[in-house]
Image 1 (tube, helix red, strand yellow):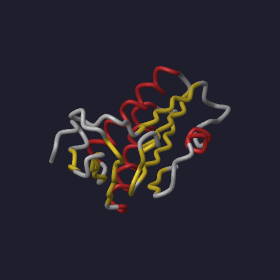
Image 2 (cartoon, rainbow, N blue to C red):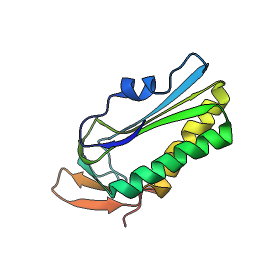
Image 3 (cartoon, rainbow, N blue to C red):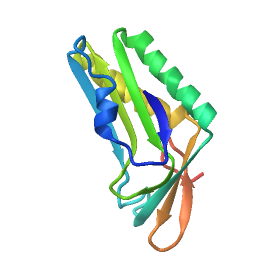
Image 4 (cartoon, rainbow, N blue to C red):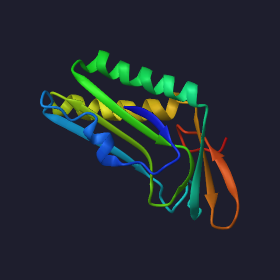
Length: 142
């Protein structure tokens, strides 16, 4: 299950997409909007913009890479677009695998690759009314 959503993410749906009787491990990553921004500024909300066709294609490639690299693994990736409030999920990744080590490694790989490669951009919007676009890899201003 790979997707972009303007609606709040349901972590149970993401998790259940990879939970099967063949897997002994499911690892879930929840990316949550925090109140402190990259430079300590007070965040009001994040705004995510995406090029859906490219973002979804890259997210699918990442899921396929996980299966190729770790064998019997499956990934579920959901990312928010639009306005995401402090405390809400901005991204959710679940990986199901036969073994826990593979599930942990594959989940970490997935989130890092999404941040590096998916055509999704993040803007921090602050309580003082200012905003800035961030580089997804380091959080640095772009």
